Image (cartoon, rainbow, N blue to C red):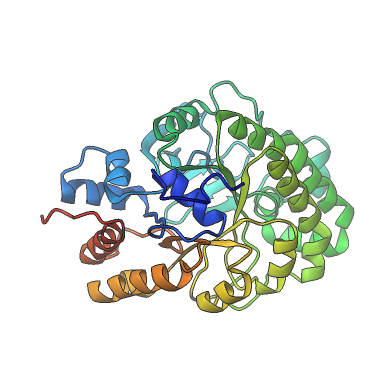
Length: 376
């Protein structure tokens, strides 16, 4: 694809496409990625009406229309909280105490700490329950109504990402339990293969195709395999269980004409050469605690577009506004050289990030774009 090989991009979508094609842009495309509460704070600070206005005011270049699918949108008590352009529809589905909910897969999530995490798994007691286990209906009427509306509002203004979180490993362990699945990978590999094949065929591919049919530029997958010290399982295990299915997903997306993006936390550098060979186009989060950002750019910057990198563990919550401005400008200059970079924080900006640092981030990216920020 070389649609934007020459000339200045006329909108944000074109700028991202040019960067993904490893062409240097007039300025680095960027995004602001935060939890809904932070969007609300920005809305109030600048006198904006809703989260979409916040994203437009900041100048977000990327909009995701899918989700992690870790809630149940068909439960009677569902309440849609916000339609945050940076991350797709945000839902809560809570019990009477406001802490627990069950997703479509029968996995129970605890939200009491602010970071949702699974606490019950439908196949935890017996792997043989897979024989009668039923996956959610990927074609449920209305599943992508909100995604369609979001895409229609941003089409041709921003780069549209379909999204499917918990794509393979995370979906499998949410159904079976992490410890149980790790044991299964050694003791019951045939069970793990069957579970992952069913996830791929009965859920992933239908979900992917429906979002591509809406009209997206790329597809963003999330699957965490690492920690800050290394992989959670061996490269051999990854090659056995994850790689073949992920490669099939990448190939399917490329055949349908969209770029492939992957979010995977932790120190996963050992897998990167193979991810590149599989055709990975865009990688997130480029987290400073796990990766040397400049070294990753040196090694893979001509092949992979990096998306993220601004430190949400140290700079955003604990730095000064000048620290935030300096890091944003440095990454824009060094990682943006020659294209292949979309500037963003490595992960979502959280509610306890100082407002002056959030404002510093917003003002700096707007400055990159040549926009003046009104003083409040």
